[in-house]
Length: 314
Image (cartoon, rainbow, N blue to C red; front, top):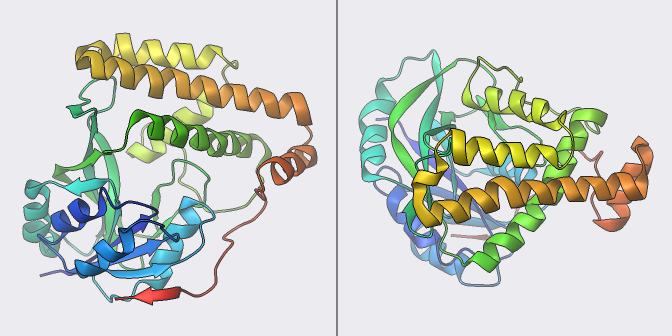
């Protein structure tokens, strides 16, 4: 049987981490958590359930996750990426147990479906299910691409396959928390859009390709989206999701989801991008200086924060 170690990033996830770990224990006891100094009981809950926990200062998701890949204490055959507010369905856990060991050596990654739950409703429409994500890969054959937003696992060799069952994304926090988090996401999204034009760093990324994998197609469409006019593109995107892709069939919860995630959030991104151009102009160095001054973010930094783990707890 192939061994799997799971990497999870946490910060104040006591509502979710126990549920996540419990679902993973159906197929592994090798759970590695990189915590960015939670102030709630996240670390205590995770440690009580047998997870290995280290704490490391947060820079961005990609930097933190690649830190987890480099410092995992387990010498497993496969690595797996999970978010703390996700859990594995029993069907997927059984599939991992039964199929992983039998995959040919030419297969180096596994795609699974993500099922989004919002206000306790499964968002089935609006092009939101199924979303295929590469979440398992052979140890040493994958890294997290160094972007500020929409980070994907990039395989260094081999080919991927698909499993038939789901990871469930079901965040239990309230709507105020959700909107505050997406306000912060919007800053990262702006940086990612600007990076398409200005190439602030030289990190490895997924190749954009329309007829490629899910993440290749998403990266291609994101580049095309970035070329559309400000403030027009979020309206077009919302109409596509809610009308063309039948998002209205997701009920009232779906209306809230598709409006906030598909229109409000993306309009906010455009507003923040407009602010950058309004205050800093379109000069590359002026934009770099703006983010350093206003947000304390170095757009040219690549793989920062690569110091050793602190506060190791088992």
